[in-house]
Amino acid sequence: MILLHTTGRILRQLRHDRRTVAMLVAVPTLLLTLLYFMYQESEFVFDRIALIMLGVFPFVIMFLITSIAMLRERTTGTLERLLTTPLRKTDLLFGYGLAFGLAAALQAAVAAALAYLLLDLDTRGAAGYVILIAVANAVLGMALGLLASAFAKTEFQAVQFMPVIAVPQLLLCGLFVPRDAMAGWLQAVSDALPLTYAVEALQEVGAHAEPTGTMWRDFAIVAGAVVVALVAAAGTLRRRTP
Amino acid sequence: MTSAIEVADLVVHRGARPVLHGLSCTIPEGSVTGLLGPSGSGKTTLMRAIVGVQVVRSGTVTVLGHPAGDAKLRQRIGYLTQAPSVYADLTVRENARYFAALYGLGAAEADAAVRDVGLADAAGQLVGNLSGGQRSRASLACAIVSKPKVLILDEPTVGQDPVLRDELWAQFRGLAEAGSTLVVSSHVMDEANRCDRLLLIREGSLIADDTPAAVKAAAGTDDLDQAFLTLIRRRETAVPAPRSGGADSEVPA
Image (cartoon, rainbow over all chains, first blue to last red; front, side):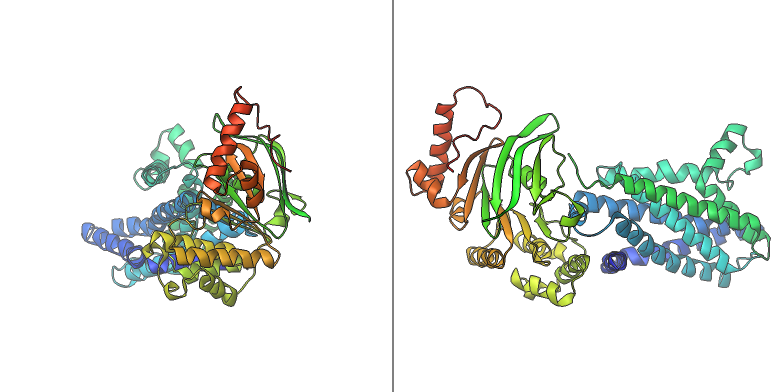
């Protein structure tokens, strides 16, 4: 019950910030439109990149939003106060997960609708799976953002965790250089990064009409990474501080 | 008279700096205790230790028979931090309703708390748009919403208009009469006269622990500011050596 009230509170905070909501919905669609015009001559390339971007945008945006939101909880004292109330740490963490998961579902649904209906994105598999994976990515970004916020003292520091945590995953996920063509040690690093599996799952949806075993396995790995990040984040929520 | 809070030989360091040096005190149930002392004397640290959010080096803090910070206490303790800790991007009402929900309470209790702190007219405003005093009261509403058995208030009346301050003290009194135990920090001495008991704290040690009348009588003055000064001077001449680790031997019984 406290969990749902916490989710409601976080969504209410978002609702009061209309510009953030507008950007959440509009920015991915604008960037997809930009990609569409960039690759107008080669439809195949657009299909490949736009599909992956549908999964990457929610990851990056939710990482940023959550790390700032959680940093604010820490710096304004609301976190300390919450931890003196009957709220459990899991209420807070899953409250964030649910709230930003819902926001991500809206974001992914709008972006996917635009991509499929107006920009002629073509995938073998159904759009529903793309949205499902996009939401899983958003929740992954959220969980890593909660964790990263523990290591930032200011908002300046928090935003800089984005290039530290998101960009290497993006570079090594197989979008820029196929994973087979990477040096062995880079492949090993790539194997250890959760976004790699999210991208592979999206590629599976792009290439196969029905969901494949690889897609489900990758989805499970992303979900597992979310749980690991949330458990680690729970460890950073201290009821007693020096 | 049973005690709600017992602090025994509490030692707290923040960083390398010792803040409380073996402080002991007992706070009776159903009373308003004023915690007075200059900025940096250790008032907030003592309050944090009572709430159970402060890492302590040694000593014990017992609240309602449980160690401070015990999970059983979370339903029964309220804490107002010095800087308002409410969500600036929510309205006053939304803040109060969220904190009420954490205690399993509904909108009616939340709205009553907002009225009690005199913010009924501003209930629909975002906390971020309020004045400092209003923001502090929004935070207070979230602390009193559950009518906790133990209420720790860190400078609840700073920056409030005198009429409102009077009303807030009437609220505190009402809560104590209903059985709550309040610890209220302040550095305004005229507020001290409204308390049942006073804890005067300076440089992490207790200077006095008694009723306002007894503190004044002990110092031989009618003015609390003057009494505080006299007690400090008397202590300094009595104990010329550097602090002997919080010996509060001269606390009047």
